[in-house]
Image 1: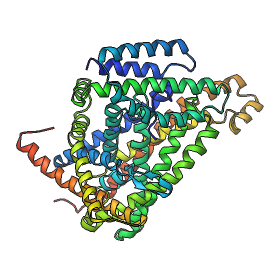
Image 2: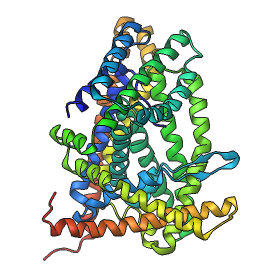
Image 3: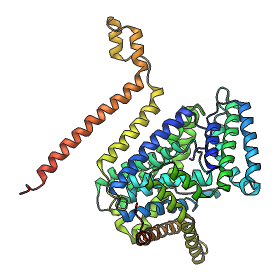
Image 4: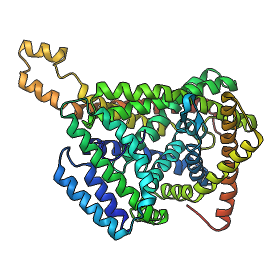
Length: 305
Length: 183
């Protein structure tokens, strides 16, 4: 899934690099605060581990073989921020040292495999495991589902980027790219499940506390990743937005208190309004969360002397 | 350093050229050919990785054939990605990674990122060697295994490698702090 150079146009490359930079900045800032100092070398070591693990081939029928991507494995054991950093280190290494994946596409590759794949699998895994905290086999099953989703999600964003760059038509690249990755995802799910089972045989605690190795997960970092991903959704879906006037505009036009040329001006400002609206809604949601959670914690705490 | 930054600039400018700018492609190819003469690139060493990374590029480029102006886009994509891949392979075959890290540090990247990149590079070959010896030991113990069995065994190797890596991380932290390292 490593995009080479020359396949993305400047606009897509700049925007995906911006998104990747945003996600990576959140990861680095969170890790500076939450990662215990004795785990800092672990990030580099686990990048080296993933790099080596990607070279071990698992045989599939008919002489073909597949290998691990490891985004979900990292997210499940390390938590989101450490996983983003581990995957980004691997991708930067592959790009600069082994020429695997293009320099101009580095942002897009980090966004697809380092951010979308890790975060989607983390969110799926963390929400599924709420149903049963203690059962190991249920957790392994959740991990398999999360791994499959991570691969499929990354392949979809990859297809979108190729389409928005005008390289390949959507009707062709989406079925081809995602169709293949529906199968590759099954392989990833199987490998991740097998590896987690084998880890659980000796170090069960690594799997029972999600993300325990990579420091605590904070709500602020998750909200930040949410902002990055919703920015991506906005950018990816904007070309598909319906340019026809919506109900309100239609009524306003027919009643004559909104002139058609004014309505057109409103439509062209869509993406800016989208970003502003997203920011307002996010601020609102976060402030409500902060107010609610801080009040609850004040109630829960025993009154201090 | 003197190769890294011009190389990156070259790759960026080539990859953002519009489709069908044949004269620009020709100029870029001439520039790259001149640079290979200066850098004394060993062709035997670089040909294999270039061909290896070309396969994925060809696979995607084939999809671009099925649209208006498909042939122009197809050929442009192939030319651009070949130029960029060759340039990156030339750089990586003539520059050491510590030089690249130095360049990244001078670009004021966050220290946590540079440290994890440096450690990745430092332990990459060690852990790769450990993975190979784990697999060699496993192969020596198992002669003929069914396809399902081999998945279990390979996953076992990976899990073992993972646990050893975590243990190594703790020892490395001890060694680093005893030498006075701080972030």
